[in-house]
Length: 87
Image (cartoon, rainbow, N blue to C red):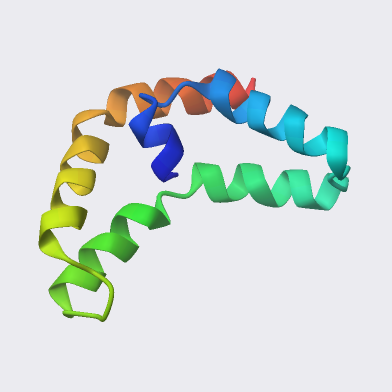
Protein backbone atom coordinates (compact mmCIF):
# COMPACT_ATOMS: atom_id res chain seq x y z
CA UNK A 1 0.00 0.00 0.00
CA UNK A 2 2.81 2.40 0.80
CA UNK A 3 4.02 2.51 -2.80
CA UNK A 4 0.51 3.28 -4.07
CA UNK A 5 -0.07 5.96 -1.47
CA UNK A 6 3.20 7.61 -2.48
CA UNK A 7 2.10 7.41 -6.13
CA UNK A 8 -1.35 8.92 -5.49
CA UNK A 9 -3.18 5.61 -5.81
CA UNK A 10 -2.38 5.19 -9.49
CA UNK A 11 -3.75 1.74 -10.34
CA UNK A 12 -1.56 1.69 -13.44
CA UNK A 13 1.45 1.41 -11.10
CA UNK A 14 -0.02 -1.72 -9.50
CA UNK A 15 -0.74 -3.29 -12.87
CA UNK A 16 2.77 -2.42 -14.12
CA UNK A 17 4.39 -3.96 -11.05
CA UNK A 18 2.32 -7.12 -11.46
CA UNK A 19 3.17 -7.36 -15.17
CA UNK A 20 6.90 -7.04 -14.48
CA UNK A 21 6.71 -9.57 -11.66
CA UNK A 22 4.80 -11.98 -13.89
CA UNK A 23 7.62 -11.86 -16.46
CA UNK A 24 9.93 -13.53 -13.94
CA UNK A 25 7.54 -15.57 -11.85
CA UNK A 26 3.97 -16.14 -12.90
CA UNK A 27 1.38 -15.49 -10.19
CA UNK A 28 -1.26 -18.13 -9.75
CA UNK A 29 -4.87 -16.99 -9.99
CA UNK A 30 -5.15 -17.47 -6.21
CA UNK A 31 -2.14 -15.19 -5.64
CA UNK A 32 -3.67 -12.55 -7.92
CA UNK A 33 -6.94 -12.71 -5.99
CA UNK A 34 -5.10 -12.37 -2.69
CA UNK A 35 -3.20 -9.30 -3.93
CA UNK A 36 -6.40 -7.58 -5.02
CA UNK A 37 -8.16 -8.50 -1.77
CA UNK A 38 -5.27 -7.04 0.21
CA UNK A 39 -5.38 -3.91 -1.94
CA UNK A 40 -9.10 -3.57 -1.28
CA UNK A 41 -8.84 -3.95 2.49
CA UNK A 42 -7.31 -0.85 4.10
CA UNK A 43 -5.56 -2.72 6.91
CA UNK A 44 -2.40 -0.68 6.37
CA UNK A 45 -4.06 2.38 7.92
CA UNK A 46 -5.20 0.43 10.97
CA UNK A 47 -1.86 -1.33 11.39
CA UNK A 48 0.08 1.94 11.35
CA UNK A 49 -2.36 3.71 13.69
CA UNK A 50 -2.41 0.83 16.17
CA UNK A 51 1.37 0.53 16.03
CA UNK A 52 1.68 4.14 17.14
CA UNK A 53 -1.12 3.94 19.70
CA UNK A 54 0.27 0.79 21.31
CA UNK A 55 3.85 2.07 21.01
CA UNK A 56 4.92 -1.06 19.20
CA UNK A 57 8.55 -1.51 18.26
CA UNK A 58 9.30 -0.13 14.80
CA UNK A 59 6.42 2.36 14.71
CA UNK A 60 7.56 5.96 15.00
CA UNK A 61 5.17 8.88 15.00
CA UNK A 62 7.44 11.03 12.84
CA UNK A 63 7.31 8.38 10.10
CA UNK A 64 3.83 6.91 10.49
CA UNK A 65 1.80 10.07 11.07
CA UNK A 66 2.71 11.75 7.74
CA UNK A 67 1.92 8.45 6.00
CA UNK A 68 -1.46 8.17 7.77
CA UNK A 69 -2.23 11.79 6.89
CA UNK A 70 -1.44 11.21 3.22
CA UNK A 71 -3.64 8.09 3.17
CA UNK A 72 -6.53 10.01 4.74
CA UNK A 73 -6.13 12.97 2.38
CA UNK A 74 -6.07 10.71 -0.66
CA UNK A 75 -9.00 8.47 0.30
CA UNK A 76 -11.06 9.66 -2.68
CA UNK A 77 -8.25 8.80 -5.12
CA UNK A 78 -7.84 5.43 -3.42
CA UNK A 79 -11.54 4.63 -3.85
CA UNK A 80 -11.42 5.67 -7.52
CA UNK A 81 -8.37 3.53 -8.21
CA UNK A 82 -10.04 0.62 -6.45
CA UNK A 83 -13.08 0.96 -8.71
CA UNK A 84 -10.76 1.03 -11.73
CA UNK A 85 -9.16 -2.22 -10.65
CA UNK A 86 -12.41 -3.97 -9.88
CA UNK A 87 -14.29 -3.14 -13.06
